[in-house]
Length: 200
Ligand code: DX5
Ligand code: ZN
Image (cartoon, rainbow, N blue to C red; front, side, top):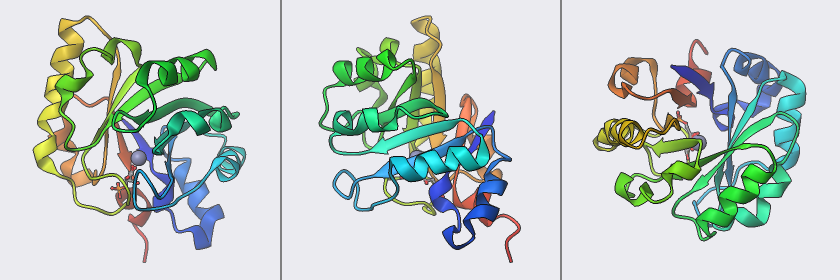
């Protein structure tokens, strides 16, 4: 199982140190929030670029934007290997997916806790990843909503029955002590549990 530190959970008053620590992950997860789709604001393309410059790690962009399509090309940056946007956003799914693919990047679709997996059936074959949110998007440091976890098994089954190969990622409240609940996931995002580990 690959682990991606979620950089918004870093202590930005010690950013050099924290970026060094983030190098310990397989890649870095970058949460981009607009204050509309979610009630929080985070970082944009300039900081995203700087994160790659400093760490050299591949970057996975998680857009929590009401209109992702308006901003996607701003994240066609060196180091970015995948852009994930929300099924619940206002952008049209297929054109947005194609926009990302045309840039030669992998594309992911995220689903918030209340969105059932069956909604993805018509679109799942077009994407490289499904990001299962196990918290309501917006903030690091929330508790995992374990009632969402059956979605992992449902996705594994869909992937098998349709003979697809998309990646299943879990994001929200993941920590070493609940990893055993995430069987079937290929990747996990870890924010506060990653950056708070071992800190005085
Ligand atoms: C929540 C973000 C998550 C979050 C993860 O909206 O998408 O990536 O930063 O942080 P933890 O692991 O602390 O829940
Ligand atoms: Zn995220």
